[in-house]
Length: 87
Length: 274
Image 1 (cartoon, each protein chain N blue to C red):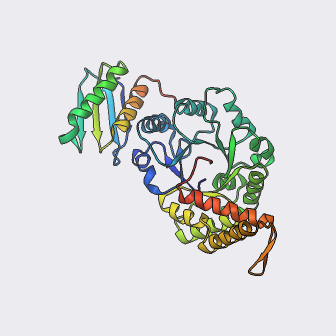
Image 2: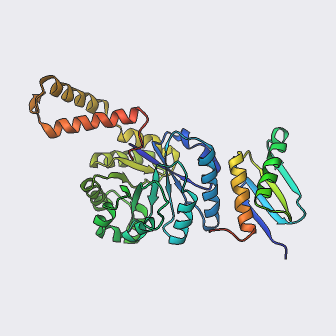
Image 3: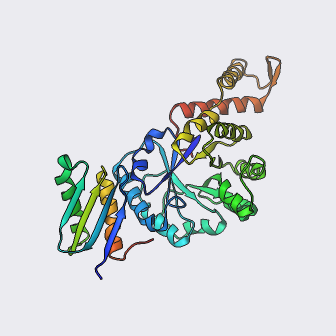
């Protein structure tokens, strides 16, 4: 069964990220998409590359999270996906 | 010097980003009770990322977990962050030992949470540890362990004991948080803790910060009285004199100076001396 990991929340200033086995698709829904879609996508792809994550599809539901929060939530998701979470 | 220590869950970005605006003298980013087991790593990562890339104007402490495996992961995650210190839950000589084998860990600045009956029999070992700078009464967990409920009466002995131990070892003394939403009762409880001699009180909601700051700020009347005592002492160089019919001697002069110093620190936005 394909693994699916979801982290984060849909509270203000936060985001929810889902990772599942896939081909590298990135889907972003954001309350600030009109202004920041490209910025968020660049950030997400950079973090995935840094952590050498390839065969996943990513969905990000953003509620106005700043870069640090998106990055932290994504790293947490990657660690959990890889089974590398310190609990 | 802080009057209020506000707990902020480490896994809530909205709270982390606003830590500056709550007017607390210090914040405690929590990795322990307010963070579920599945969110521990998220809290570490959010806190690490936030404090690495955002400057804050408030003293920041982090409450790590008491469980040793989680504690080690917490300390490794915050190793290089610009924080004032650590709040150590369920402080005991055993939990303090964790710092011995984490040599790279800085800063050596721990506020020990006194919240188990056992801690009351080991104050000497806890309070004399080189990293311990303050004692913090955790009334909720203590009362749970004792099988009692929180009240002014049931907290009387724990408060006195924690305060005595803190003063005996030159440590900061922080009173237990108030856990109901009754603001008037909080104000009374904070004023009572201040009158006992506590330096500060913990808050578990931003709305509690203002009443706590008010309670721990000396009144205008006390400040004016202290100014007159110090002025009279400096004018005459005397350590013993009469003012408004009251005999003033060295302890009273020292107390007046300490009070003015405390007020100056509060008004200047605090310093990292706890």
